[in-house]
Length: 138
Image (cartoon, rainbow, N blue to C red):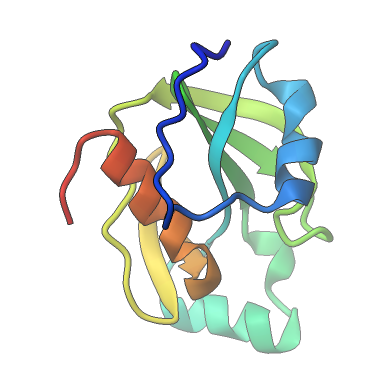
């Protein structure tokens, strides 16, 4: 559902279109995707780095595609082989006022559904924009 008001500013990032397209079947009809990012769970960053460098621990991790719409934050379970870019089902819908950041470093830490997730730097601008739109200041 869109109210026709554009809340993006000239410097706001555009979500990856593949994530928007793949997540659409799991969102309410008419949802406008404002931000989208991928996260991967791991007990600590060293465990995650082993997965990233070798893939040896990939099947112990959970992969999530997080899609922020004008009304909510949707957490989608993604296939392991897609690295998070292949949503398969909706896990949870969080209130739009959910704070996701701040994040920093190459792999920023985000708490989703009580689990620690690591989000690559390329998605940090999506998290910052989602928090700004929700009324949080950096």
